[in-house]
Image (cartoon, rainbow, N blue to C red):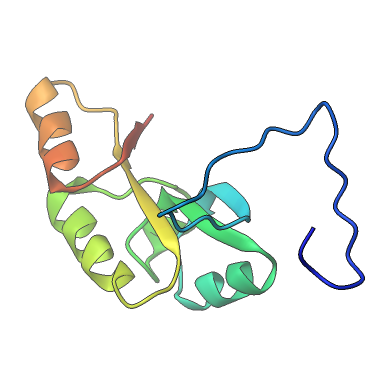
Amino acid sequence: DIQPRVTIIIGPGTEVIAGEGKILTAGGFDTHIHFICPQQIDEALMSGVTSMLGGGTGPAHGTFATTCTPGPWHIARMIQAADAFPMNLGFAGKGNASRPAALEEMVEAGACSLKL
């Protein structure tokens, strides 16, 4: 309890973790994002979200309907663009390929999940 006028109740349902040497950030995790525009990140941060998982390619019609990022080139571009933001971002690749090689390419490009 280190904040003035703030009472933090620690009871039997509280798990205490060691935080020495770590950066620990409380916040929400939105796991269903259509990455349409960068302004979404600002809005999420202001509402307490610190992590976002989803897909898309930015302002494109295909992104309106999916939370998957199509292929290794787009995944790499989204990861590159994400470097500019103070948000934990994860990108889902399309997981509906008929052969494993296409799925492996997306994972190697940086997809943290594959979505059907």
